[in-house]
Image (cartoon, rainbow, N blue to C red; front, top):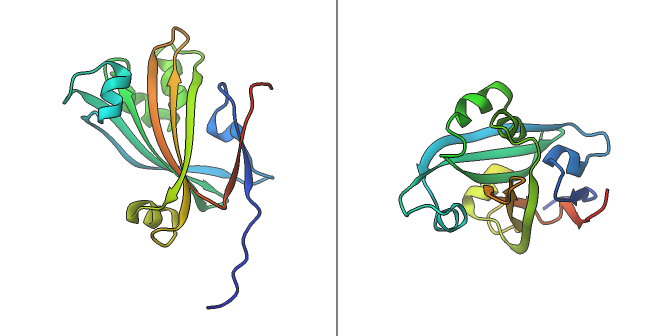
Length: 173
């Protein structure tokens, strides 16, 4: 009931060496981050396989909301191998940056080894965080970051409102 104006989707470039902020060409918009959760907890089945852990082994869990000009645009749920990042909480507290945590741990460069995108409907939790109604069409993204030696260092599961972003995969600068 009423008139709804859809914004033009934002261009998000996915390349193996780009940060979130660098990837989102925001047309002058301001990107901000809100940390929703940072805790140690049991690894998901996918993280157990990816990081070579045993079931029940702890990982670092980081859930964040990314905003563009103050409006929610992306929610992510990340897992990191605890043994690789024993000071994650302290390093993250200084900068609120995963890249800064990588650098503090001696990882000067990382690469996005894999990105999977599938359509779906927002869960109740995703809808609430992103300011959507439940079952709004969304894009679910799962990605894996690796260090220069090829070891997996991050498992990320994210969610974009379907009409908010155009994902562009590229291998060149």
